[in-house]
Picture: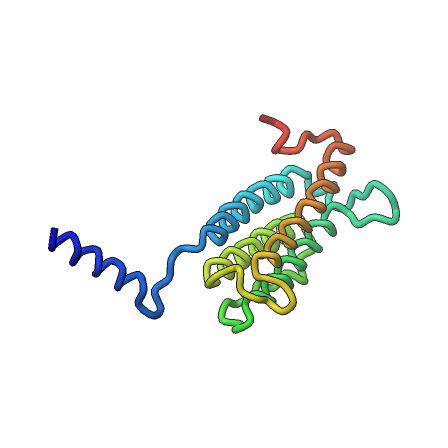
Length: 166
């Protein structure tokens, strides 16, 4: 019994020591969701032929390529706000114009987001006027808006989106 009590005291003391961190389940969930979204968005980007990257449904809309390029830039901008220290180098995505460049920029923006997410402490902490988790949710929500637009572009060109091929 005495060994049990000593072991229990040691476990409690180790957990209570300054600097001890327990895994943040929200961070783990968001990292998984972010990786899943990267796979979905890059598959979508790959599905459109390069000669259709200039397609847009109406004159007022962005082209397919512009949708994805804009998303890459938005991800970098939003995750820069989480990396207040600037320790994680943000990718340069502004110059992307061709399909290959845009797909690479999109993947780099998601990789940057994943690196910034992995470096965070608690996502419940403040990032300006909102929590860090809320910044990530806003980035994911923005991506799904663009995903929906790009799905329409694919379908208007006779292409079944990868996520619908199952």
